[in-house]
Length: 406
Image (cartoon, rainbow, N blue to C red):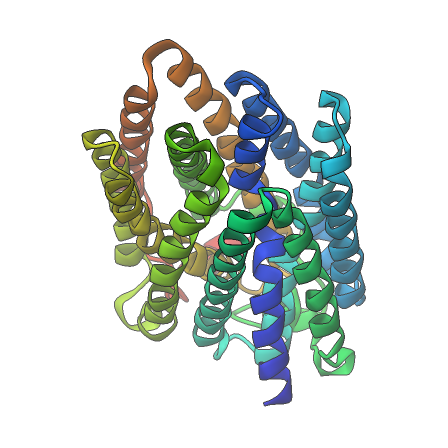
């Protein structure tokens, strides 16, 4: 139970750190630094590219290392330093560089948390525990966003950076409360589970590249992030242009609305993903994402935008909780769970990086409404691909031999 509570604390305090400055950075650069839309998009794209470079090696390192807690502590310290120093940087090069370093460090958190969870809880309790992880993660995001909104209303957008640094330090304390000797490090990388449980070493890397289900899932994740990544920053910019003095506070309101909805979505996945299967829940996430894109252009009213943005809590909440479960299904017994996570996250990062640049270009040439409609159509294409090409992965013991064959 002590380790369960430690995981709760890690997910709560690490929540804001894993997300980074994200849309807050766009608001800060737009309203305080007076940067153009395309400059903001390029900074966010550079940061996303740094994540692409680091993510797969990060997953491989987490698979190999027994110092998973130490890796998370170092990453949190990097995020803290980048957050504190950013307000004192003025040039494009330094701002882009600091965000590239922070996002690269953030790349370690997702796979590390999933690995430690699997190593502590085992595969049978993994689904329910992942749901609980995500619930605390979203609760932490909602808390941090609400605090940022209140503080920014009084002290300006810069306070967000210091809140992020404070959450990073609290996450370090939480990480260190997890006992290293309680983690089964073979189990944490996906070994000793499934038909290959008798193996003493991981399978060859070719097992991942020849895994058709993993490749299809990877493409679907790219499409999801290509459609999703730019939506919240675009909403934040629309709100900031309506009232630049409250841009950060309004963005915080959007984030809180979505994160509150994500909590029950994560709980739903934890309790029903093993009963209903992964596929219907994942399709629901795609459908909701597409619906958001079609609804945003209907009104510029801030309350309408808040209401539509709350749907992000349902779509992204389902996606976030299902992601490690599906990867674990597809890599069962290979010993490459975290490498596979890193590889898929790298691919989805390509979608996220392209999303902000694509949306920025569409906004400049055709306006915000056109950008939202383009993103909605991309999400709809992902729904169709997953529906027709992706099999159910839950309880796929009969398909595992083809997945892990060398």
